[in-house]
Image (tube, rainbow, N blue to C red; front, side, top):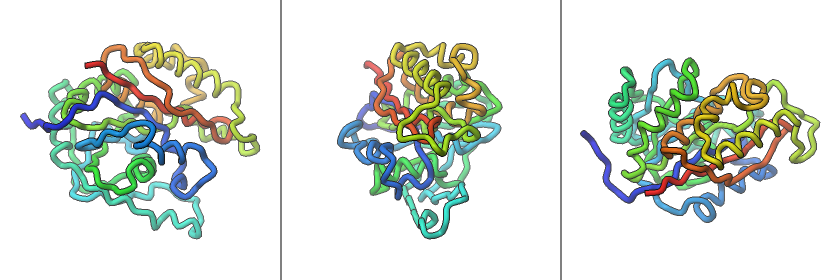
Length: 275
């Protein structure tokens, strides 16, 4: 069995990654939150980073294993003067970590776990990491989500990955806490919140800070406006992975909350596991 030995990490995180232009958009407070990551949120140096982004969907779990991560521009609609397509995040890959992830998930009962030796990082991964760790000097691998599965499946996936924390691996789920791109309010004032979005966001905060993991796993039945807040679960399942990796009924801490366009919540959470 392959293991990675280094200082333990107690925390897992779920962050909202924001839009692709976040690295060059100074008006969003989310950018400044992520830029202050090491100073205000997490000053430990991880051995590796594994990030679960809402922008990599596969039928079966897949983890990338490359020497250097390519920067994937998985978006359009941004004019050339913004120079988004010139941004690069050439973080070293983590093939050994990828094998360890495959091993842990397979041992947990997931029969087929794939390794992709070509794929780089999508914007759900490189956009926040570019702000959090701009030197791109920590090895990174990315794990896919399965929207054909439910939230509990992803929570269990996180539980299987929990031993990585003791091996110095920082586990980050990257999505958007309220994410309905068909109901954006382009005329919304700064930090204005549409009621249905605020109700879901507040319910989630109360569930997370009180350690109600089962309620969050069953959010479609428990949460107000759940299907409006997440018409598809891609940007929510990374939360379940991070929550599962925290273990038990670990209570979360809200570490950031801002809004954009009335319905996009950029709430972000830290889970600290007591050892």
